[in-house]
Amino acid sequence: MMLNERAKSLRIVFMGTPEFAVASLDALVKAGCTIAGVITAPDKPAGRGMELQQSAVKKYAEEHQLLVLQPDKLKNPDFLEALRGLKADLQICVAFRMLPEIVWNMPPMGTINLHGSLLPQYRGAAPINWAVINGEKETGVTTFKLQHEIDTGHILLQDRFPIGTEDTAGTVHDIMKEVGARLLVKTVQGLADHTLTETPQQVSADMVLHHAPKIFTETCLIDFNQPVARVHNLVRGLSPYPGAFTFFNGKKLKVFSAIAKDEPAGIPPGRYTTDTKTHLSFACADGFLEVKEIQLEGKKRMMIADFLRGYQFK
View (spheres, helix red, strand yellow):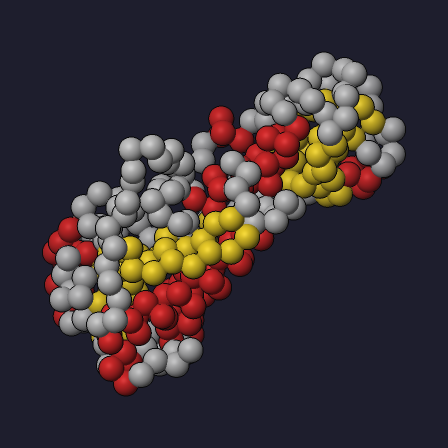
């Protein structure tokens, strides 16, 4: 979608860090937006050599000759002065950190955020993961105006798409970044044309809100006392990162893909059955989870047949 001249004339400051945000920045650039500057995280040491690594957004910005700022602190006076100097009409935030009011309230048109859920559902840091973990059949993206309380601003536009029974957080992420990028361009056009209506988020008294808090290690530990469908959803919702895990003969075992089998287990939850060659299944409350792609502590990620071929059962 190419923007009209009114939208193209808006000076936009883009804020984002990971690969998810690159799709949005790329869509804005290709639509003809005037990107006055890009704000992203500072370079961080990573890998065995602890060499400084640039964010995905910084790499894209430099490849396209866009001005990049990398503040350690968003309230730093030097950064705020530099940000004001960009004279943005509008700021766009995608997969970035929480912004202080002095930043999000700076441009005359405010700051819009692209969020990976159908707000007001799944407010928080990990909306993609939790939608899959909870077995949702549908999710979507929302553009909204930032205000004081996180993920509560007035909605501008939304778009939705289905979650398949075998989708993972990774596949949903890849669909969502493209759907979200297109929605963001539509939002910029609508704001430029004054055709969008800001809609307050409606939370009725009988609505059950699902939240999306940060994923911690304890979230990833598989509880095989749960129904197999729920265990399968946990695996899908944490794949490919950070990965659901259990313990296998004393070692941590991450499970990246599996099949839920709704059949009587006949053995206590958590116990496993295997032919030592092609399959490994763990008993759940009402069935088996047959693991397909795994990673044993200290080993590389591999398909189950490859793992069993080299594993010595005691």
